[in-house]
Image (cartoon, rainbow over all chains, first blue to last red; front, side, top):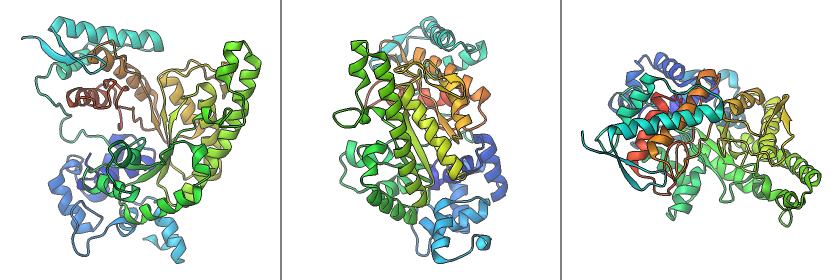
Length: 100
Length: 349
């Protein structure tokens, strides 16, 4: 789908974490982002969306989120559990209940 | 219309008339239907496959909005090891994330089997922890059950491939049963550590490479992992379209493993707790790519129709209708990919 250039990573995360087939996973992500399914694989639309939400993108920029910072936002945005995010928060002593 | 450019399953060029192409597609789906005891593709599906295979464009694609996600096997082996690019695994992951735009990625050790990873689990875990801090895309840890590694002289178990030709059937079976118990322990040990390291999931890859006992080890390991870590994500990619009966008597949930085709393998994977299933359909190098694509789509469609979990058919060198070549041609790869998505209804590749 195009990974962080589009919404490929987000659809893949939802597909795995909620065991959804691809069309269901796309609809889930589109609804959460307030976009159409068509938009999810449009790199022009998704660049603006990803930069606005600061959830990681192919283009590096000052202050732009990468890695665990981006994933913490993605977990909140999509209302999914991300293993590395949970463990990172646990190491910091932050409650998972404070995710939102 | 002149002759249509196509390829053989070994990647060599082939030119077909329209009638010949249609015959190849029909023969391919009938072969799968006969072997798997499943429905062949219908007329509409065969017509769409004809359009895909007969397209004069070098590369074909799905319509915008119909893309699917990619998952990997042997992810970090391909760039630094197969390609010889001097970059570490973190660099490989980030290159796939930011340059190749992969939807997911997979970290694996160069031995790519659970048994050898066991000895270096601390270093593997440390690598995964660093990668998880830096990567935005989902990163899985992948390896093979690879039951053969448990045989003498590398392992503690007698080699069933040596025992079987001697007619020592009972001894060969006993050796496989012993090996699969060891493999379950090793798979669990490694996967538990990688889950604790923050991996987004586990890719049990090339499952069944050593036959039915290999498949059994993977199913049992998944079952055990899921019972202790219900939240762990597990993808299971198969080694071949048909589970070899090296043991012949092993059953999971009352189903004999030897001889199972993808749609039956899927059902057992679901029962064990697998989250994404990767069926494999072998490419026959002496048959045409259209024949192989039609055959692969028939098996994958049979999986998709009954699947409760996402299906990611293996689509690479030598499987999924892609030619048996380490530099598989783009024209063939793109046709196989589109066909698996549109006709096979794959959720990913």
